[in-house]
Image (cartoon, rainbow, N blue to C red; front, side, top):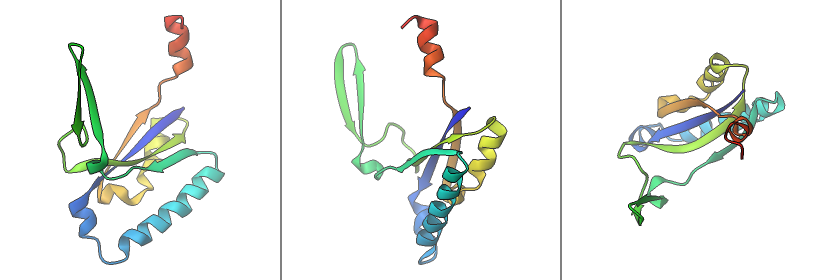
Length: 124
């Protein structure tokens, strides 16, 4: 099964890290990501730019509106993601727990829908 592991960050908590701690955490993440990739668990990962660079698009009643910033109003924002392969949700959560970012935000683990199955179901 594939899972999307979404990393949420809180700027206040990141700012409270001791000097050099962020860099240390990132170095560890890169090492860990390399290990997970070698095991075939990590299929891809990316960091996202800060939410102030985002735009949210909504279409309602045929009218398009574009807003600055992310969709949700929250201190925690989506900072990056990892696409992983795991046997089940329990294993995916164990992998997610190995990342340090739950201390400076949150980590959401969500199953990826099998788009081929959906395509077949809807006859597309």
